Each structure stands twice: as structure tokens, then as C-alpha cells.
Length: 285
Image (spheres, rainbow, N blue to C red):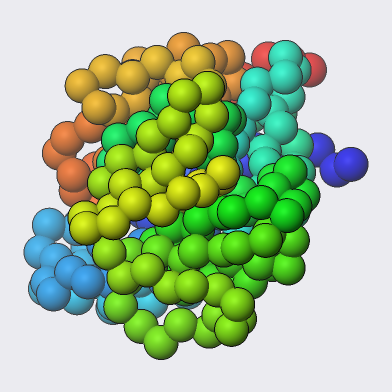
């Protein structure tokens, strides 16, 4: 398996800044992100405090970012990262159907991850999961519920429905659903995941669903769940001035490390994180 020098999780200003600065220093990188880079960015009507780009819209700034990374031959991998495990001298990065390896990791996931449902963290690994395609075989001939926060979740739900005896789909967005006929859509808000040793029910606003597994498919999950053992402080990843976390080889930048939530601040931190990751890798030679 190929082992990258640096894996960058997120494609907002912090992630892209980390990517181009890692690339400038000849590091082999992989960047996990989205086609729009950041939903927060493209929704911004006007930006006036990004140096050199006065009175620019978020979409216009996104296009500038795109021109820059294309010129630097930085490619994005459009896969959702579910878990990152520190393995000693490298990190194992788990996505839906693949595992990647990198010597260093830079987390730039922002703060747009959804707060966990009641019971979600309690039953993680005991009926609650974040990767349906990874864990679906464990639920063959069982009742499964998929809580989808985006259209991509529908593809995973369709796959799981081939194995499960019954599949409920709870969409957390409004759209046309491209789902198999045997999937029951439940248009209610999930409130609580309950059970004894394992998941037994999903409590909705006006009904209960008896289920043996719940897959929560979000755009991103909280850093503490993403990277086991990662130290948090006031809801943000704790870093020092070099963007170093408490885990050796793991760095973080942008909104996920704290206020102010500003694009130019995030870009600067992405630069620092990249330089720190490069120094860390060079020290290991």
C-alpha cells in the first residue's frame, strides 16, 4: 500500500493552504475534500478582509482557490474520512471502502460537523457506525436504519438494503431520494438511540423504530470521534503555536482549532501546519 507523506483532511482555506505549501516542499500528499471545497465558503455573499481580494464573493474566492491548486497540480480525493488511527510511525485513514496511509496528518475539518445524537457516542461500535459500506456485512438479515445528512448517503443505503432484512432511511435534508423500493423513508427527526448492551431502538419525534444497527452518515464527524485520543479544549482541537496536537505527527488548522472563524486566519494556520508537518517528517529521516 502506498504511504503518503501528508494526508490533509478538509478542503477549506486551511486545508488548501496546507496542501499547496506541502506541495511546494515536494511532499507527496493526499487531500480529502469536496468539489465546492467548503459549503461555508461558497455561501459567503461578500468577503472584505481577505488580503488582496477586496469585495469578493465566496464563490469568486473559491474560483481563485481552484485556479491556484490546479496550477500546483493539487488533486482532491472526494471521499469521506470516517476514522484516523495513529499506528506509531504512520496513520491509517479509513474511508468508505478503502484504507490510506500517511506519515503525517493535518486536520482542517472546520466546525460544521453535526452534534452527535443522544446515544450516538454511547453506542458507537455497539450498533452505531459511520461507514455503512464497511460494516454492512455485520448486519446481514437484520433491521438497519441509515440517518443520511447528504445525497451521498443514499448510495450507501442502497448497498446496505441488499443485505439487511429491513432498511429505514432517515433523510436530514430535503430532496428527491434515489432509493431502492424496499427502503422505507422516515421523514421525522431522530431524537435518541437507545438499547442495553447494543442498539435496540431509534426514538423519533412521534414514533419508535426497532433496529439492530444505526449508520449515521454525515459530511464530517467531530474530531474527537475522528481521531481517537485527540485532545480537545472548549469544543476545538487543542494545538500549540506550531499547530501540533497531542498526537505525534498530527497537526490541525482552521476553524476546528478555535476562533476567530475567518478565512485568512485559517489559511495562515494551514501554512503553519504544513511547515510543521514538513519539519516533523524531515526530523524522522
